Image 1 (cartoon, rainbow, N blue to C red):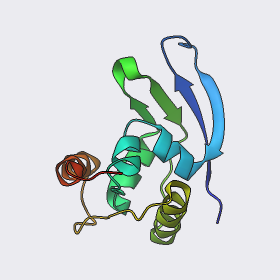
Image 2: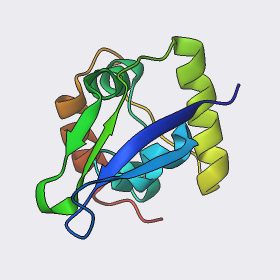
Image 3: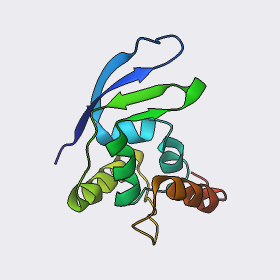
Length: 120
């Protein structure tokens, strides 16, 4: 199952935005909301946290840029497939968390705390 996303990336050099298309696993790894926690911390967000982010349709990292997309959610089966594809992309095993109902904000705090001593 191939999951693609179309999004607009805004930055200081490109305030009008650049339209981009790509695979969802690349989008997650390349963007600030969870990219470093996934790629460096080896932590993957639970379905609830990921759907909270995806359903907003935007993320603003301030000076770090912003991203907008058409809001959507994924199913549990798509979440499982996405985790596997992301592991393959990064060539690592990603940890989940015990609380699958965690909010995105709580997941980020959990991931930061639990990935501090991890090395890639």
